[in-house]
Image (cartoon, rainbow over all chains, first blue to last red; front, side):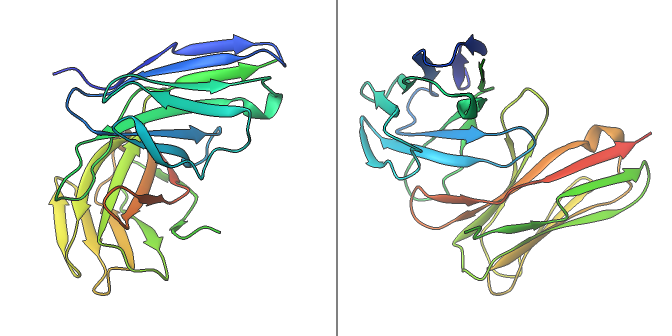
Length: 115
Length: 110
């Protein structure tokens, strides 16, 4: 079946503009995660969805960042008034919750460049 | 605060050599996962270990979970250029939460 998809794959924007990043998880996966990865570094947790609710928003860096999810489907991450320090790859992952060990399946990411 | 420490951060070796990457914590995890990430792609799960002392082998890769479930290692035998990538460990804490290490960037030179 299809994996996690993200769009756009690349986004170049000017400082101060808003951007919207999209994630389509694997069908049937109830959990969805957003991460940020700066060049050559590990993953920085942003937000977790269970269904369309977000029990953990603790990783969102500022109030310029927000995310929503429609049912157990697509999610969008919105960054308002982008800053140069927002430049990074934004990764989305989904997992099938239940008894088990929370294996996450990742999309290819959206590379965001803020000029 | 980095709950999972990976070492080394960077490793560049010749094809055919052996190597070990470490993932250490003072916290106990219910499971430990290893992922590999190649440039331009998302991480891909290699293995999950769940029992203290568990050893899993995946071809030339050997994964071990510490007896106390606080640390893990990844050993690669006879490394090949195709092993090049960023290796990430992630510890399972609750039903959804994974704690991620910062990664080990591995380069295997032909």
